[in-house]
Amino acid sequence: MTTESPERTVYRQNARLRLRPFEPWHAVMAYTPDKPALHWLNSHSWLVLELCDGRTLTEIAGTIAEIMPDRDDVLASTKGCIEDLERKSLVHASTDAGEPPAGKEVKNR
Image (cartoon, rainbow, N blue to C red):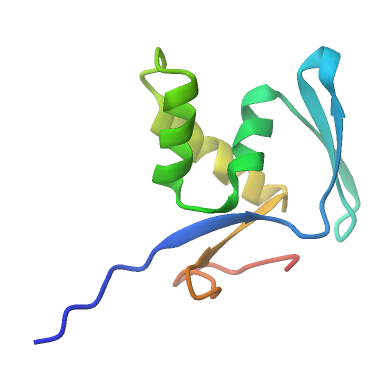
């Protein structure tokens, strides 16, 4: 009997993404050159984006929970934020092997 490990989905920033921080506003402007658009990210979205460096959703949410321990909805809000970042082509999901998860299409690689 062989035991296969479950697929491990990780998140990474779009490699062509351009960021411009606006520190006084605790925000960042993100530019996606492949689909030319500007996106304003608040401090939470910016933090999630920065943590998309090959980590899983659980790892990202765990790091945020350490920073903001009083939030009860960290996993749900992090998941929603990552989904929004994916829709905007700011991040993409892949497996540890670098392939898109089953049923997911990766854009702007």
